[in-house]
Each structure stands twice: as C-alpha cells, then as structure tokens.
Image (tube, rainbow, N blue to C red; front, side, top):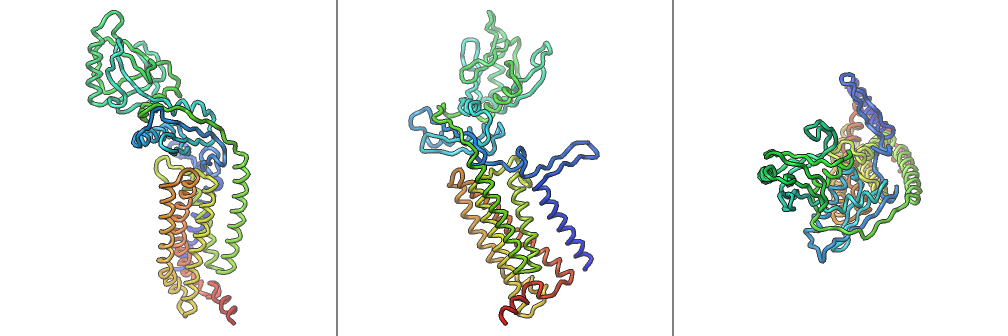
Length: 441
C-alpha cells in the first residue's frame, strides 16, 4: 500500500511539473516512426500562445454601417455572422464582432498588419453569379453553390499549372450548369462562354466546347495563393444581405496595454506567492498540497486559454478584464481549499483518524463549494451572453477559471491528500491542529 502511494505521489508530481513546464516553456517532439515534429508551444509564444486582446497589443477598430434604410434584425444577425465567418477564415479568431444600435456592426481586430485589406475583405458583398454572353444570370452562388475551396493544379488542357477556386454545386446548380453549358457550346460568334462574376466584376469567362454535367467546376483568373483563398472564403462564408459602408477605421496603440499587462502580471505574481506562503504556514501539509494544486490550476487555465485540450479552433483572447477574471478565480480556488481544510481540522479535533477526517471533510465541504461555484458560473454565462468586448473577456476567463478551480479543489487536492494518508503521514500537527490547540491554550 505504501509503495503504491509513493509511486502515485511521484506520478502526480511528474504530471504537475510537466504541465507547468509545457505552459511556461513548451516543447517539440519528433516521431521516431514518421519523422514528423509535433510542437507544443508555450502559452507565452507570440504566434501560437495565448492571443492578446486589443487593449494589450493594439490593432484596428472598424465600424460598418448597413447601406440600407432600417435593416431588419434578422438581416443584421446574418451580416454579423458573415463577418464572423470571414474573420475566422482568415485566422482572426481573436477578433471581436459586436452590434452597435440597429444598423452598425463594430469589428475589433487585435495585432493586425493590414487593416485596409481586412476592410475590403469584410465589406465585399460576395455576390457570385454565372451569366451567359448576353449577361443573363444562369446560377447564383448563394443558392447553387454548396462549397468553395482554393487549390493548385492544372488549369487547362495545355497543362498550365496555377491556383484556382473549385466549386461544388448543389443538385439544382448542377442541372442549371449542365443546361447552360449545353446552350453555350452550340453558340457561335464568340458567345460560347460562361462569365463568372463576383460583385458585378468579371473574374473569368471560360469558353465552352461541350456540355458539362458535373458537380464541380473551377474558377481561374491569374490567382495567387492568397487571392484564391480569399475568393474561396468569401464564397464559402456567404454573401451579405446588404452592402456595407465603412463608417470608421482607426488604430489603437499598445503602449498603455503593454504597461498595464506588465503591471497586472507583476501584481498577480506577488499575490500568488503570498497565497502560497500563507497556505503553507497556516495549513502545513494540506497547505503544501493546496500549493501544488494551485500551481496546477494556473498551468491548466493558461493551457486552456492557449487552446490546449479544446476542440476545433478554440482560442481565448486575453484582455485586461480577462486577467482580472483569472485572478478572481485564483482567489476562489484558494477559498475552496480553505473551506475543505477547515472542515478536516474540525473532524480531527473530534478525534477522528486522518483518513476518516479527510473523507468526512471533503464530503461536508463539497456541496457548499459546488453551489458557490455554480452560481458564479451562471453569472459568467449571463455576462458572456449579454456583454460585449471586454465584458465577454472577463466572463470567459472567469468561467474557465471557476470550472478548473472546482476540479482542482475537489479532486486533485483530495487525490494528493489520500496519497499522503497512504504514506502513513498521520501526525495531526502536520494538518494544523496542533497550532490551533496551542492558540486556544
């Protein structure tokens, strides 16, 4: 039993140390079989670590106004979603899209290199049309195109290579395209063409020599890799329900944010060190366990914020209010441990064994801890749902922090304490009871 506890303690310490090291420094593994490298970046990595918000690194604020009178709420929702999709397709996952009033959509893009290019990408109507030589519309992207991707390969029968956009048509779109190409192939006098138009601008006009009955077709037009990707993303994300006009474009400098970030991190570090010392002095052995769990908690929150353990392209954006949310959740994590350890001390004063006191203390404290954390999680959800920008940043980090703190307080510290009891560490003085007794004397 003692041997198992020793092994368990060593494994726990190794896992905690590994997670802390990964969060702080990151590492790279190379597969001995395939030779591929697998990078696990530090949470502080500029490119792959935690994304920083507009208030920390600067960026651009762009406001778009609907170019129609009194747009409906449904159309505004659709436009907001299209902008979100376009930002995601270009890797701006940390951008914030919010509504202002009934006709303005505000976009905040941190750390952006080319705001003008972003403006053109976002406000493009992306109305894709296929027309015949006389300008008659054959197909429309919104109803007849199912998917659009950029690719590199052969462009024509002569073997020319280049970038292009490949479209996958719907069943109805395939039928329309087949009928249109059959008609075009029979035309003379240079009318055997199908024009591909985006926002009334001709992209290409390939000649048709025979009927094409296929679910896929390609768009060519001297594309670069980037321009082909942008076009494919615009088509894929859908067209706007109305055109947008740019009403504001301004840059935000990071100088204040850099200073605030350094100050906030310094304050957080000082506070964490004080808490670690306090827990160790007051609760001795359980305090040491709480310190290990707290360090694990900080590492887990940082890794989750950087996208570790999360599905898809999840990334959280760190803002100054978000830092406040993390610090607040650290306090709640310590508070949960204090409640548990005080319960354990009460059980020990009643004469119970260490093992029995730990089990009873957790049983009596867990309900109160879970109830308190659930109410905080509900508040975080409400703030996330109805808040905007920095408020959402605070809500997200608070929610993540509370969930992780509940896990570390209820499960990790309990696991470590059970391992210590398995090592026959049974002196009540190591659990703070002796100090309490001396104080009463």
